[in-house]
Amino acid sequence: ATTKTKIGDFEFENCFMNAAGVYCYDKNELEQVINSQAGTFVTKTATLQSRPGNPEPRYHDTNLGSINSMGLPNLGFDYYLEYLLELQKTHPDRTFFFSLVGMSTEDTHALLKKVQESDFKGITELNLSCPNVPGKPQIAYDLETTEKLLTDIFSYFKKPLGVKLPPYFDIVHFDQAAAVFNKFPLTFINCINSIGNGLVIEDESVVIKPKNGFGGIGGEYIKPTALANVHAFYKRLNPSIKIIGTGGVLTGQDAFEHILCGASMVQIGTTLHKEGPSAFERITNELKAIMDKKGYKTIEDFRGKLKYL
Ligand SMILES: CC(C)(C)CCc1c(C(=O)O)[nH]c(=O)[nH]c1=O
Image 1 (cartoon, rainbow, N blue to C red):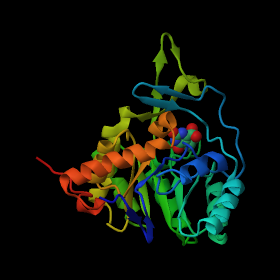
Image 2: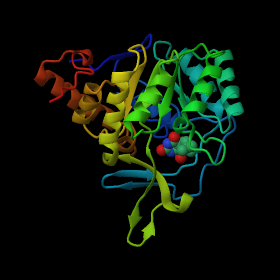
Image 3: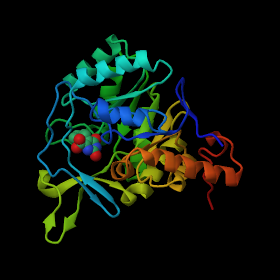
Image 4: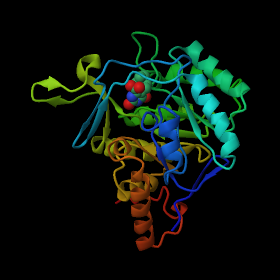
């Protein structure tokens, strides 16, 4: 069996990659993903200026997953763009993802205009969990603002673009969000980002310093929500908008389920943080074994073919 895949006009030898935020902070970490079995990588979400992020401890692993309130620590847009342009010379046959977020609408447009004007030939992932104006929920939970933002972006941005989405939990929100995304020539949507503002306690204390311990939840805790978001959007979106599945992938079986729900690419976050880049080889082999046993030659043989009772 082969686990190769396609997103937009791009082919990838393997349908696995890191989730933004994990193993993607600098060239050293990104090089390790390039040299692993991963089909590609996405950078840490870049902002216009570099950011130190929140005070530590800001990430904590648990038996069932992780919690984080990193606060967008990153080396700044120019660092990642320069590296991505260098990779276009050294790895001309590969396509990489550039994750971005503006701390304001103005910043978001400034970032995307710089990408548009640059020689970057890869795929851009816009993090819609980005903050909104104070007193309003994150952008992706404010669909009016999301629609306005995407309308403005697509008036000048002509390169492949996808959005990283937080989980939705109400069927009506799936309907409303899909109706917005279907209006735009998105290359993909990525479901899901961590489940926001969870709380992990050990003994009598929170485990991370920022936000009184509140943070995004990843790992085993979130697979049911991740699978539901992947499948809900798979059923609602124009087939031209591919789905990247992220959340709760520990094994080949978990990846199989994401693809069954409609994912064309699977991102690994918490498991990659815990296990390191060798996780890509393990999970790829586990998925191939499942496909061989079931007689599936490519992921298209079962992608989106989740059975109902
Ligand atoms: C939560 C934000 C800081 C607004 C975006 C960056 C981000 C972070 C982070 O940098 O804290 N952590 C996540 O699990 N997902 C994210 O999208």
